Length: 229
Image (tube, rainbow, N blue to C red):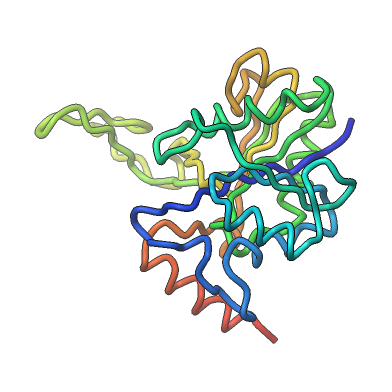
């Protein structure tokens, strides 16, 4: 069983313009900041629609996709470019290069506090043979509701007529996009990074943070400044 880290990085970002290419810390753009945190532990494969990023990765790490280097990048096919392409389709394009018993862990460069340990948690769980996929989550133990329409809601994990203490409620697992690990063979069967035998594990703060808004960007930079020695 071999392990590969897969990172999709696109050029356009709607809510935080240019976020993958902004300098996050230590004069490094966000994409490099995150890659440098994990590249010494795992081989990394980047799928991108940006020629500028492709050239930057090759210049930074001295790599070509078919070379024996730790960080590799390639341009994605034209039909997989755009803001609304499912990550599952990008993974499907990538896993054709791998064996069925390999393990892939998909991450995002928008998780600036990602550590190799989170990736290894996925690998360990899948390697145990008990599950085929594993991902991080935030655990919410509160009264959850699902909106049906403007005036209709359905409770998710509680009976509104019986106000049990929140600590007794069934926890709700919320994906936080930090890591998604899966067995390649199981992914090919289901065409999804979350398979039938899946395991969620909680991500700690601030590792589970994802930059999705300008407020997220500012908060992550502030936290990083506090954390730096």
